[in-house]
Length: 447
View (cartoon, helix red, strand yellow):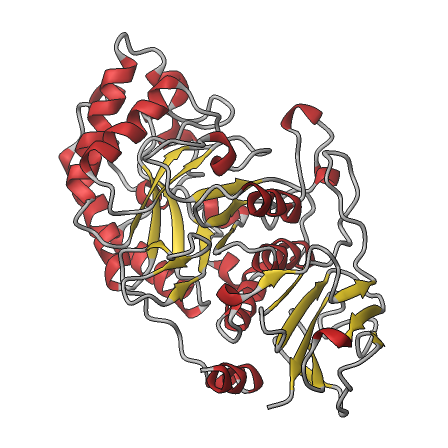
């Protein structure tokens, strides 16, 4: 098995796209996601929140095929919009039907939900996992929170809707239940989650809250909660300290320390075309997630999540292209069998600043991981520098390769390094092929 893994590592182009056998579940050690055949699954997802109520089945099919071509294997969606949001949130694109009569979640519009049936079944046929949010709360008066809080009997209504929704869609193996939606828990959203769980516990179930804490931290001991979602922005991006933003790697480090007993994914961070986000920032949060122990990362793009008139073009933007390269890289390594080098015992210098607070700084921190037998070690370098490698950790001499995350190209150092002492290595050039200065360092023992 080790020789096969190394063979794939040395020849990543030979790797085929992973066919996922749904439904998904936690691995035996609860650290990552596996499918029904036991193979590890890294969710390379895209937030297309408004897809169900913005476009037709045929437009959705063409777009989802485009996502598949970019190696996305999951999407996150809002199941439905309230009547106000249906008009205001889609930038001129609406499918044509509201989801509920009188915005009452116990009065579903069958025509709308038949449309949703077809979309979810299409995703199943395309082997795409769907993180489905039945009642997206919203952060800023833009979705369901204010509506359900005006109900006289909001808690029982939301529980009943959760039961109904789970009963209707539990047969689809590709579903991941997604409660909440950009808002911290309220009684109605907990009732919805409990309603779903009363009908189905086979599928993974997570929660999308405000950024700052993972759902694993928020819902310790909740039996319905089986997948932790990390949600945070870079501390330097937002100065509003009430959100207590942490870096992606900081939140995932805390997941590792606290051992919530479930896999974790990065469900949301900086979106392309928002907050001055560059393709390099998009890559940072993806590789930080991968090498910090996550089992998935949901990419965001302003035009794609809004499903506005530019959403198809967004598939060719630099961040989207970087995610295709990222997923190809993920499939070339045994990420599920790697441990984070948090103690800096393998990559000992040049790691940058680990920022454990809500204050700006730490964008240069280099996450790293290695296999338990120290035959493979990987470091993501978010900016150019020299890194010191403790070669004593390897049992045999090693070879070193650089991976350009902007293009997917490999650059091999034409020498063998002895497995003793400290070796100081820097990237082959200051800029990668797309003009950024981030690189991935790969160190592997010789076959």
